[in-house]
Length: 290
Image 1 (tube, rainbow, N blue to C red):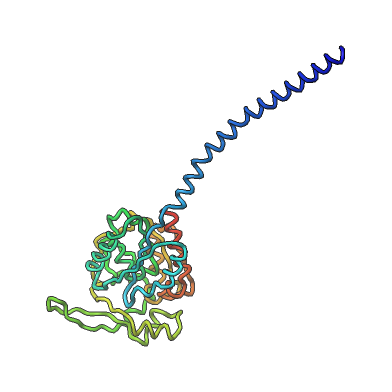
Image 2 (image 1 turned 90 degrees about the horizontal axis):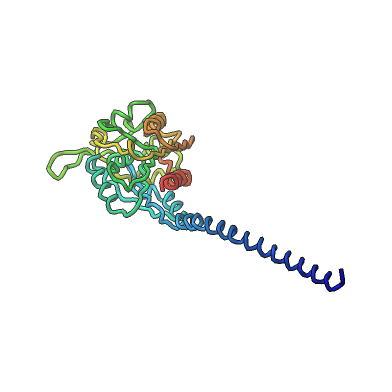
């Protein structure tokens, strides 16, 4: 073979190799593109989910209290980007209070995580029934009654509550002229029965600013129990002297709670003394049911 033939053969081989390499690259390119294309919808979907607005958290306080009891929880939730509402609970009895909170819920657009403390738990149990926007119920040291039950009966199911002995009943006149009874905590008993893990100064502020609730709240009958249809989360206050911790555990178990968090040293106002724990459970409820 002369030198010219050798050069032609070598050139031909190199050209063929180059063509084969280009073919391989061309063959691989669509595969890589297809992989990118198939991944893209997943990435976009994840981004869309991330950008979806968070549910509104609605916080309902209980007796002897007002919405300021939720201040620490509100601060934590808002830092995480949650819209929060803490409307005033009228404290005039379950039928009145549930109807009012039901109207508040109807004004909220989009999904709701509904939270109730103490007597507020009974209110949300009744108020949330039939509302498809309520995605989860979070009970914080709360009553969780079933249809036909009364709080005055529930609270005596387990020993440990000091509320009965520490009440100061005060009569008042209803608009129709009949006499009702408002229930206050005796100021010197707030620490003992209600807020044992708060400072003396905090206890004094609670005693001075407490809002009474109607004695009828203990005899009103629950007419709807939303927890039968809506996922439940619960906080047990381990040193609760208002609602016995044993009752809280029993109620949450009966409601088939998805998660229960127990705070061993917490008093009845666990959302004041441990707002981060309460906020974290609310956030989990939102994430689980968003």
